Image (tube, helix red, strand yellow):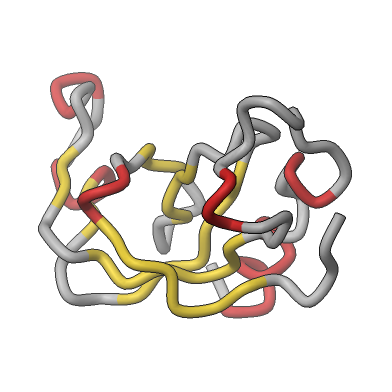
Length: 101
């Protein structure tokens, strides 16, 4: 995917239009992450369903655009367009979307 396509996918994040008030990550202060730096290499728990591990891996210390659900959970948008859910200790946020709810 091109960078423009990755950004377009990040802009489809549900958190940009709806955030669950009691469950959305309070540390975000209403902001929505756009990009993260992966702190450790993460492989999908469903790696065995993929034709290649290379399709479902988020490598440290690379940066990735992210898709954020309305609860604040983050998924890295991989170069092939697939999403890979990340745990909070596996990334740090490097950029935010401009709008804030």
